[in-house]
Image (cartoon, rainbow, N blue to C red; front, top):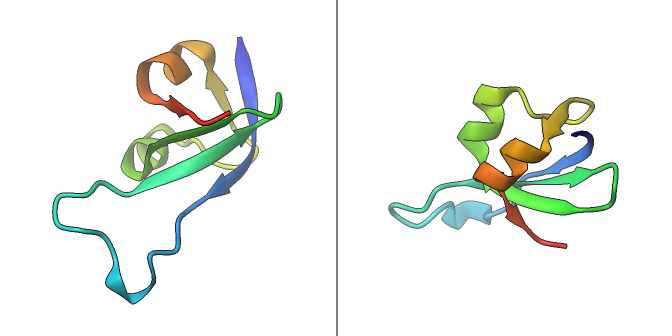
Length: 67
């Protein structure tokens, strides 16, 4: 099953940025209300953005489900 991405949120790390070795992540909000976190570069490469779709298989493989 595929889910519509209704929102993409990037964290605001201010002027500190990310810690050395820390991978930037984004939060995707899905049409069923779930929020999932995954690496920013993965989302970019896969084209996962607001208005696109993500499959259950990709969610299971790559995402950290937040609720």
